[in-house]
Length: 179
Figure 1: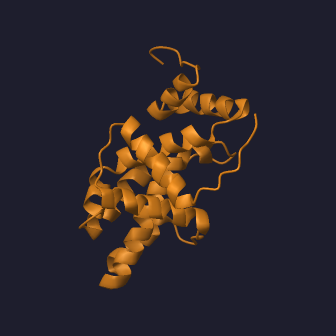
Figure 2 (figure 1 turned 180 degrees about the vertical axis):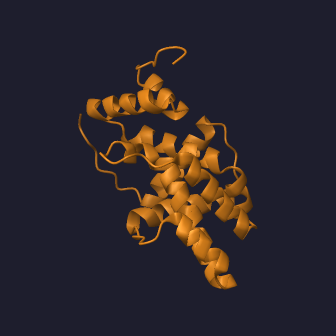
């Protein structure tokens, strides 16, 4: 399969693909929330940061921090949880154990809810839907080889996650009914 080089800016790429994924999943979010997620994804591409603490430890630290530091730490928790929650299936391809998605969903949603206001209230209430749209976006743009599809099928067979079944079905690999 031939790979094409894209000359599009990361923010344009993420905007286009996130909008399409949200529409396909029938998820409606406010423009400022979509903008926040696009900027988050663009930042993750430009330079990921490493963390010495777990997200749970950062969350606990945030609750004891001064107000300005609290918001920064809570955003870090929510943002990291959203990215992991949306891209967890890719991490599952690696030899290590996949993360506990329910934990990341609850922690990220709670972090955004604690911050409050726009866009965080909406991100808290629609956390799972936004993470699922990220998963859709990722599978739609990254599954290009038969090896990728095979690994996704293995992942689906272990988790029975809806997005994996949809991604396989779109590519003509229909998971067994009732599984």
